[in-house]
Amino acid sequence: MAKSFIVTGGAGFIGCNIVKALNEKGNNNIIVVDDIGSDKAKEKNLKAVRFHKFIGINEFRKLFVAGKMKNADVIFHMGACSSTTETNEEYLIDNNFIYTRQLCEWCLRHNSRFIYASSAATYGDGSLGYSDNDMLTPQLKPLNLYGRSKQMFDLWALENKMLNKIVGLKYFNVYGPHEDHKGDMRSVINKAYDQILQTGELKLFKSYKPDYRDGEQERDFIHVKDAVKVSLFFEEHRNVSGIFNCGTGKARTWIDLAKAVFTAMEQKPQIKFIEMPLEIRDKYQYHTQADMTKLRSVGYNEPFTSIEEGAKEYVHNYLSIR
Image (cartoon, rainbow, N blue to C red; front, side, top):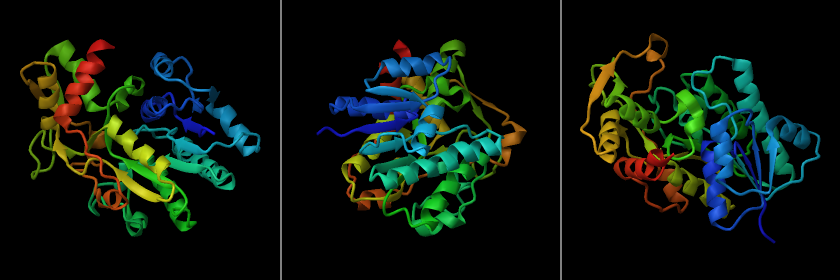
């Protein structure tokens, strides 16, 4: 019998790409859970994939909390508030911790494989490094409420000895198709394309640390197709559990990214450095780089797409033909 799947956030960025990848493997027995409202970009995402049924978030929570939801073989829990600037702590805790905990407990009762989105935001300023070793988890200090809400569930799973049964993925800076609905939370590649198209230049934040020159702040940029491959690896290897980084293991500068986008658009780089808003200066990460040792140690051996190849593919195959 074909496997059954539930993908929360299935009309969102990573969720939509997971559904698409499952479709390509011949799987259509998928329930998509999301909140669409009047979001045209999310509607467009849904039209790009095939699924058995769509359920709104509130209805879905009511169903599984009441024990009226039919279980599935695998649940990809990508649905969450992903805004790093969200200030409503109660909302974040409900969406990113309580909802995730309820769904996790439901999955364990029904022997469903539970794969959820954690976040690289849990690492805070990176002073403790970017190792996904479980022993490090309680020491991490996220810089924003979003990161803290994600950290809450990671800690709950660790303290309740759940990590030998479930999978958490700390996605780093993911970019690629189907992120148009994310507004200010879109990847810089997505924003850069539109900005360059309209003005011929790209604005990047200045650096406020003497050991980083303007534009040399670093991120671990991962193409969504690679993030999805990592996610599906854990669906295929049910014997492997725990919290894992999902990045490339190689930090690149914002200037590297900018040049990659300009090259993909066949334009000469024109970069303007602007002041960083005061409200985010003390919460800004200057360097992120996933430690991929743990993922490699459990048998994941796929290569990761470079920012140059990823930007070219994203611009040519998606952004320029939207």
